[in-house]
Image (cartoon, rainbow, N blue to C red; front, side, top):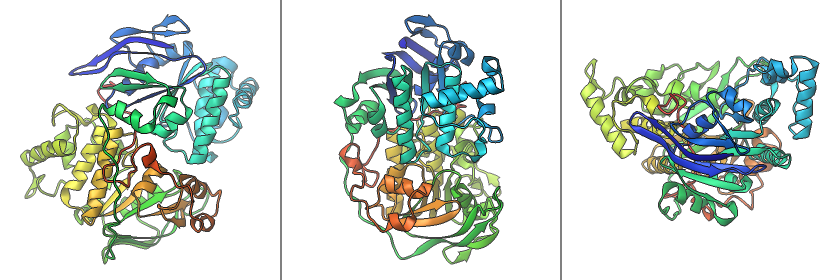
Length: 539
């Protein structure tokens, strides 16, 4: 594949400007860059969702004109999105053939083709398995199988490791090596630079909508790659002293939440204690109860039994508004569903969840002037990149949406911050800024409950880490001694919690060797943002 002079403009924004690079056949080619760098727009162009204003795309030396995803598929280009496009109540076969029934029908011929692809590329997929019964790693392999079934020769993977544990990441990379060996080409977008360096044959860096360089991964380390992305030298990491106090701020006592599909409790006896100045991390494969735990704490679900205390006050039956007004800040896992009104301007989004508090309210009325002025402050203080407080939230990239949410939540002097995947899909600068905010808040005595799929983030920021598996807490780990591999084993049940927790890992990752650790005040790591699907670029 060869791109030359790709340019795409939106009102007031040049998303891509004269982008050009070549992707060699049978290689893994990585694409990295900051929030708003233009990666998302470029991927949409390659998959036919957007049309470039200028430039050309050639596949196998032949220029192609991609007006729709159907055109991209016909040209041999397939895309695996970060958020899987699968129907849980369908089998693998039904998901794979959906929309491609003309290729091999919907019966034995399709089943045989799925098995053939699965065996050829080591995907280990049963065509008759129900998707609802499969784990995250298997679902991702189904998505790859879907594009291979449609005869793709170039596969675009958008943040493919975002929800995988280390063992699943290695399985994915083995699959990618198998694809390469068969002559297929992979375009790999990721915010985890160590993984990019591990799997890529070439890396293209995009900054502010244009191509900066294409480098050999053998010639750079993660820190140098991050500096290429941001265009400046990164600060040197420093060590951080513990700030944990004896004062209990948030406590859950034997929380139970029934209603699991297999008659198993969604939450089963969850007891946690978070002190002032402490970051308590929760590690788990998605779907093991961590989302429901957050919803119970925030008053969005009522527990079947058990208690939640804020200080010495039982808040188990409080409404969301009461919990928020009592000083619990919330960064939701799904910012579009629970944190933003995408079609509303930024200043109105600043009010959400705090509509009864200053400066958003004056008596019983909304104080629009106060909210607007404070939105200007948040934009400046938290480096939210936007032309105006009056633009719609949908026009911001995902990372800038996240910074707006965090600025809003930290503006009311909270006692507790419940942070679910706070840096998912954000770039190197935004991630470093969020880590700095959390570290400063901890120093100021904030209690933080951190749920994250990024194990190095958990290890880097947490004072202690609990693993949740099938709704139960199965082990507590010291972030100074545990490795990501140990956590991954405990998360999947591959190792008993007691075995992992009582044997410190001698080779715990030293992130600072390549990029600064999030445990360091000036730390940063290379990330790659996937801008909002509802962003100005996406429209």
